[in-house]
Image (cartoon, rainbow, N blue to C red):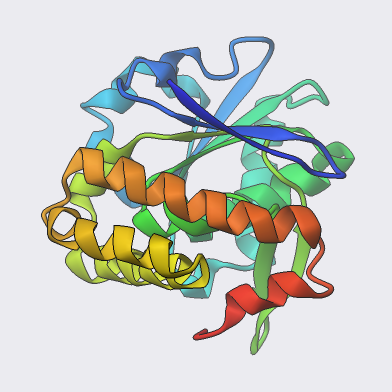
Length: 239
């Protein structure tokens, strides 16, 4: 199992690259666990790899850009409190970037912070947004106005989730990978160009290399500028 360690002034955390879905059953074994799962991911995998988790502890979260709001965070609060959530709770989020935002915000604010594990299931989330510790919510007509800095204690990447991602969303994530490798320099760019045919075919080996490379490039920016006051803003070009 490959691991990338991210240094943070809030808490250091690890990104693990998983080769078997067995890891899902072992996440957060110490203490009380709840799962916040993207409704689309749940529909796709509830009879597959997700059947290994405790079904009674699952919170199904409807996901849409219009739902990236405090109302959805409140839904997560309510479901957690129905389960008598305490400070020792671990919230495990399984989904893409929108779920990361709403569940990460909930984890960062409930009891002033509970343990949080993120399992990204989209290419954009696996290769980019999963690290950096930012959560962002929309408020009224303002996009990403409300948010926190709160990294997960662990990020687990399992590339077979990408086999079912819609083409448009997959290609959006691939575009971010290319952008990050451009930032990384010519050698990095040459590497990703050579991998493009395999990445378009969603080859698991190529995806592992490309995602790892993207995260290492982004890590260099966020460890120097964790709270977006300078150099990290360079990552926003093209947005």
